[in-house]
Amino acid sequence: MSSDEILEIIKNKKPKLIYISGKTSTGKSTFSKNLRDQCGYSVVDLGEVVFKSVIEPFSADPAEAFITVYRDTEPKEYVNTFVRATKDAILSKLDFSPVVVEGAIAKSRILKEIFSGEIGNFMFIYFHPINHDKYAQRIKQRFMDGAENNTTDLPKLFWFFIDQSDLEKFIKTKILSKELNEAINRYASISMEESKERLKHFQKNFAEINIIEI
Image (cartoon, rainbow, N blue to C red):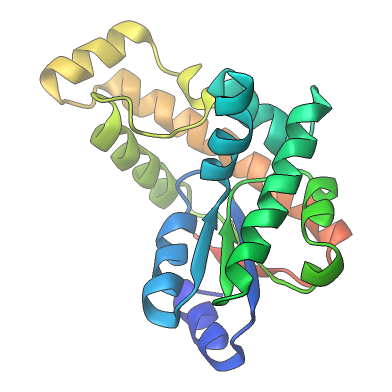
């Protein structure tokens, strides 16, 4: 299913609460903004919730905080605080408008804790990359747009593939070298496999998931 098709379904059905998931650079944020601009949805960005509820109050390392919260690891205090903050953010906005929640949570348990009780009914949308070249190009563009100022928001795993000297050369020349191209392509392949496994995990735990293939 395409994002345009899902958008039309949303315009017709007008679900009060939507959750959008998927790996990095698949289009989650753009789709959330479209729902805000075209359909009047308020957006709960889980990245912002992590910063405000975990990173700032606990002085937590950002990369580690996101891994802890999205993958449901230790310390559980981070996870529990994040869950409460997310529920509060959703409920505060639902009083005034429909809400779309956007973020790359990897574990069903956290989602079930968040979307429980009075907000247990929601539309689940998953952005899943299936075209390697298209997906790698999205990641390359994100890297090129933000590498100089460290504003890519690409996950920690991505940077394990990037050699520091290649990064420094790119910042000076703005040319994507063969080495960087190969590194990003390798990361894209791994991310696609992770997406496949994550989607299988969600499908075992949620009855209906609307899949947008990238």
